[in-house]
Image 1 (cartoon, rainbow, N blue to C red):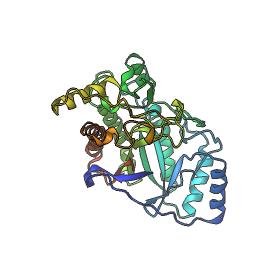
Image 2: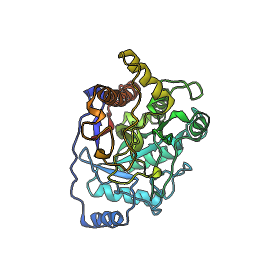
Image 3: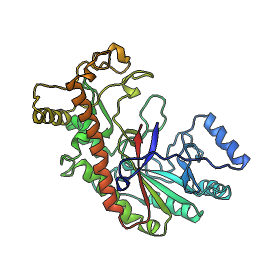
Length: 344
């Protein structure tokens, strides 16, 4: 399950639980009706300083939109949303959670940020007397089977990927996943001279500069930093677009040239230059016992297997630590709670 985690300032990610406050019957019924229709929400409740786990809390008239700010960076139905926000305020809700999509804000070109629609949205939330938890969403929205909304990462980043597809997570068969940039390029200046981590940091700096008034007055009380697919600190190991179905085991996603090179350097340093990335871990819909890696007395029990799994997980931890370090630097001095999503 995905969980909200504290930032590195408080040590390693730490699970937090949230409780849902009672709402007036009329609002609760409306939420249930929307849930039954399978709508995905745009804003989540924050009540009594705790977020609700209900992602369907507020929706606009258009059920195909995942965010109140559209892919085209427009903020439609402002009057209707204002009415809904006021109803939530009257129901005792303290705030809302908003995805702030990288693919919308920096869509046109490197370092060209357009915050206009989000500024309007945040000012409306402020006007209604609600608080905001802003999510720095560096991943693709939608794209899996059944999804009706699609907000890709910035087009100019995808263009870099057309020339160098190894910037994306890759499975052993060579299939790429462009919903999030591979952590293998976190520190490689492949994006108009910037590294991936520098792009995330610059984005957060621009957010701070453009939303400073809302940060200073406490309207923005939480900032959640996305660290991977769906905003979670994990690999895209089970993409439906590549045929995965539950309960398949998924696949390792470390076969781009940058992570390959990193692994080669790691095993050489460990005195085992002959070790290679796993070739016996199966495919997306296998079961563990049908693979050489996870089966009984499998590779994962060997020195080589343990080394790989340690390297694989540590790369993810280092990725999260580095981005959260940047976030800590950017928002230092503001009275906001910094958080990230982990996968556990």
